[in-house]
Image (cartoon, rainbow, N blue to C red):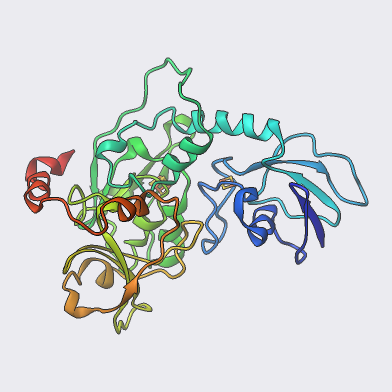
Length: 324
Ligand code: SF4
Ligand code: FES
């Protein structure tokens, strides 16, 4: 099918969404996504970050669609004309979406482990307003442990549902989900059950914000001071292909490998993620390529791989931070 996005005509297969058609071209015309995740079935349609304008529905029916549509779950039609960055209406609406997502989200980037690789931080930076018009009381929650390896900051959650889909689609026996409805919605484990299964750590990687954090990595370092290295090991549970976040010989955290849209290419098991912090257990392939404009890359231009004093981080890693 032929579809035109921001004046660029492309051909895609029947059934392709506008989002994936735009991703075929790449660059600025790709709408932002906070909830869609290629490898999670049924994801998308929750955050509205990806709204676009369809100014011509199809060749057969050239009428424009009356409202902006979510590009991650709207399929293209023959002759469809879509406007993303060429539509002032879309850009204005996106500002409103950022404002909406930030209604309850605290601005705690300076102490959030996700800072520097947070989709919401990037989204707000690229599309947000500087102020909010929201005067009502914000929702607050205590930080809770969900299992041995993961901590949940519900205040940061944007209810994208990605983590519940990981629980549903990747692990045996779903143990957590979204309780309640509307502005009362929250992530919770059922009856205080911990999330402990072989692939639960992937929830941390799919979370677009810092709501689900790795308890082994919390407050130990900032991502832009670490060197991401591709590495692998023989693993009986997963592909064993990971990214080691290192300073010198020390491994600070292990994550899956993400693509340019911040999505995992392969899900990795908890053994690889949480049980192998010794560099001898890995075959290091080499430094990982990081997009030039990424915050993670910034340090590499100015300081090379120079590290911050170790004492500073052991101080930050003090027990008292545990409940923060
Ligand atoms: S905890 Fe993270 S992944 Fe789960 S719904 Fe909230 S924002 Fe999405
Ligand atoms: S990415 Fe499309 S609605 Fe969230």
